[in-house]
Length: 199
Image 1 (cartoon, rainbow, N blue to C red):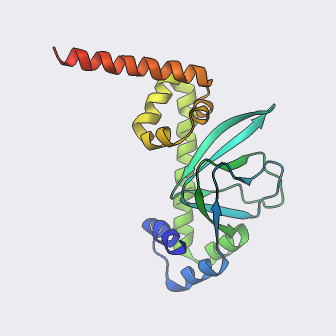
Image 2: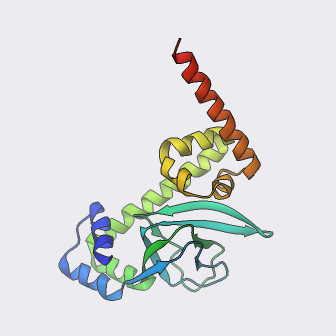
């Protein structure tokens, strides 16, 4: 599994043998079951995670309701901020059987200071996540719930099929009932369009 992790991150930049050996020495493979909480709000987090296989959702607990904010899939790093001494406000939970790499934050940052290769790779992943957050915010401001759903289906259909619908609804900012109505409208429009195309 460690080799799969290295192969995935090397798609974004090179690593030499010494850098790989350093990461291997300090990395831990974590195998999680479905619905296993890996990071809890209120805790200090000293590690960085990388999703080798599976899916993790990030959510907030708002008055007892879980508000899904983001999904991490195979090939994604999970960052919780550089400060390991301040409690986080987010929760991270697997939504299917998941394999993770866990590495201490300080170990990664120390290697980044001496390795231009790893610094470049980490910068790529951080920029990719920042862009994803920016798109998410822009979609909430500019798109209707139905448009957000259609955009998600168009760009990540596999996620929509894999993830329980209550999580998708929360991610889109709607109730499960509203999501059901949206899906029904989309299906009816698609069916009507197919009928029209036959004439």
